[in-house]
Amino acid sequence: MESQDLRKAGLKVTLPRVKVLEILEKTKQRHMSAEDVYKALLESGEEIGLATVYRVLTQFEDAGLVSRLSIDGGHAVFELEDGSHHDHLLCVKCNRIEEFVDEVIEQRQKAIALEKGFDMTDHSLYIYGICRHCQ
Amino acid sequence: MESQDLRKAGLKVTLPRVKVLEILEKTKQRHMSAEDVYKALLESGEEIGLATVYRVLTQFEDAGLVSRLSIDGGHAVFELEDGSHHDHLLCVKCNRIEEFVDEVIEQRQKAIALEKGFDMTDHSLYIYGICRHCQ
DNA sequence: AATATAAATGAAAACCTTTCTCATTTACAG
DNA sequence: CTGTAAATGAGAAAGGTTTTCATTTATATT
Ligand SMILES: [Mn+2]
Ligand SMILES: [Mn+2]
Ligand SMILES: [Zn+2]
Ligand SMILES: [Zn+2]
Image (tube, rainbow over all chains, first blue to last red; front, side, top):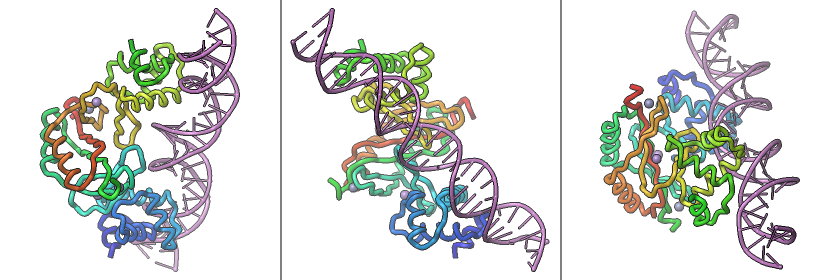
């Protein structure tokens, strides 16, 4: 019952919001661009405008329902937020995305920010390479 | 004699290329956007088109003379390549950029790539926060 | 030094992703 | 059921970057 998730987030329960959430929950690709979501909606018979998809994804991000990856130079990619922070490995050939968590790196980042007098608000780490399947 | 640097890189020695290189070498700001370089050229009396600035910066990147940072959501930023890899801290208020090197993080990244079967080609790490001056 | 030719440039148009505008539709509180 | 604020769709606009193509320039050759 994702209507509850929406209401909890202070968002009115509208068809576009319910459908976008459904797509994100049902898809095989955990990481989707706005365009991907838009196309998936069309395929599932929902004619929801791309502008609305962007709006809804941004609202979901603000509400903590999804998180946004900003990949090198390209378009943003969204994923359902599951509460566990992680970073990403990207295959430069097939665009496969894998996830990882590394506490050592997380700690070092905090230490570096402290050392440099920064109040760290966020970080972004991407490892680019050629995946097993592509090499 | 930056003409030599250009020739070594297989690039013809043209006025735009020489001037862009000069700007990058003389500027106080180590990190400059294409627009910044373009404006600095204008201020120094050189009427070089923005498209040329983009082209030249990309060629310099390919030649290993500069490197490009892809900052979250914004425009690209370029810096003269000095052979020493480093990552960046960015102030979300004043856009100040600081640099750091952390061997522990570098090593962990390699280990993670290996673990996941990736042949690592690159990585990008940005720490966002509020700098000393802005907090 | 003059010439030929491939490469580089400038200006403007095109591109691509994302955001905005605004008229219309919708959710939902009363 | 009604009124009202919020959400939507379509298209325009934004903002950074790349492309196109006619013109200019660097440099190898005479
Ligand atoms: Mn992820
Ligand atoms: Mn730097
Ligand atoms: Zn791959
Ligand atoms: Zn600052």
